[in-house]
Amino acid sequence: MNINSGDTAWVLASAALVLFMTPGLAIYYCGMVRVKSALNMMMMSFAAIGVTTIIWVLYGYSLAFGKSNGGLIGNLDHIGLSNTLDQVTGPEGHQIPVLAFAMFQLTFAIITVALLSGAIADRAKYGSWVIFVAVWITLVYIPVAHWAFATQGGSGGWIIDKLGALDFAGGTVVEINSGAAALALALVLGKRDGFRRDPMRPHNMPLVLLGAGMLWFGWFGFNSGSALSAGSLAATAMINTQIATAAAAMSWIAFEKKRDGKATTLGVASGAIAGAVAITPACGFVNPLGALVLGLIAGVASSWAVTRKYKYGYDDSLDVVGVHGVGGILGMLFIGLAATVTANAAGKDGLFFSGGTDLMQSQVIAIIVVGTFSFCATWLIATVISKTIGFRAFRDDELNGLDTKFHAESAYDITGNSNRY
Image 1 (cartoon, rainbow, N blue to C red):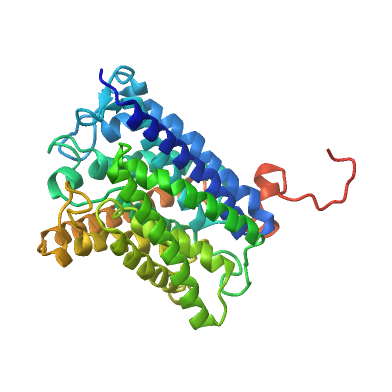
Image 2 (cartoon, helix red, strand yellow):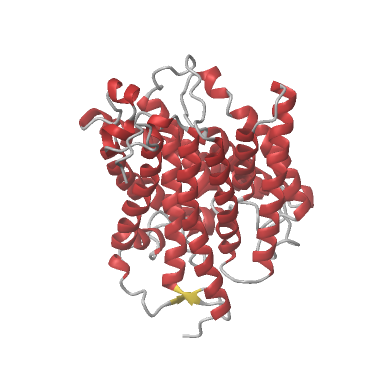
């Protein structure tokens, strides 16, 4: 084996950064909900870490990245991560251990399913959530990851190797997938008691900002690590990530100030996430000016989109649809417009660089297929769970809070009992 130690170190560090994002998401979501269910939100993210890791080792990696069967799903050659210990992947001169790649991709799977918990905050049974995570990763995430990430010299996943759509770091696999699934979950479980009547404000904005900062930091591994090498492409992805994230944070609060008269801390945190989401598929295919334009658009578009749940009556509690779904779509479409081979010689030129319409057509097809598949499959999984063991918590438990019901704990000691240690 001729392993590139620099590239390997970068991928391993990036995997750690992306894993760090899930505790960051837990803190972000914790601060956004009411006190009575703060711990439950964090526990849903930690369940995603545990369950997804087990599945990934047993069969998840094999089905996602094993030899393709018709571009739809991998094989079972790597059950239990077998046949990987002494294997490498990547082009000559930039080879890394397969296990480094497997670890990196595992962290993507973890945070994708953890994102979905935000759509059903305050009202899901914890045990049912754990089961949902296992089923959803198996039936939804793994196939989509194979379609968009498993390049095998033209005979891998159908989106990346046959359709030719571009998705650098997960606009389809992570963002559109989670946004569509979140909408399905919100519809199946229904609205929280008091939706559009009670304020339901975030209980701890410092935690929201801390979680957003952790996500911002981890996103550099998410996007730059997807280059799978420590070179100029990783640098392009990193600077583009910073530019779009910062620009969206500012455009969100500017739009918010004009619309509502105030620029809020929740707005700047949400805007940053929206920008990072939008640049995720495009970070390795556009130039820095393109990243700036995309970030400015994403902040405004996502700020508008999150208000649609009140107009259309679906309770996406923590705005997964409006931020991740809409942001992912914007990023994928922007590739069709502004991708340039000057940013990535392995990419394609978009319409703004005389690239024609073929790339945009591929991007649109990828968006529609992944969004439709994720929504329908998630709706079916959630409905079966709801009709069998039940997915939504009982009303009294929802009103009293899920922390004490499912975890026998509360986020804050408000008893004043000095005997507690």
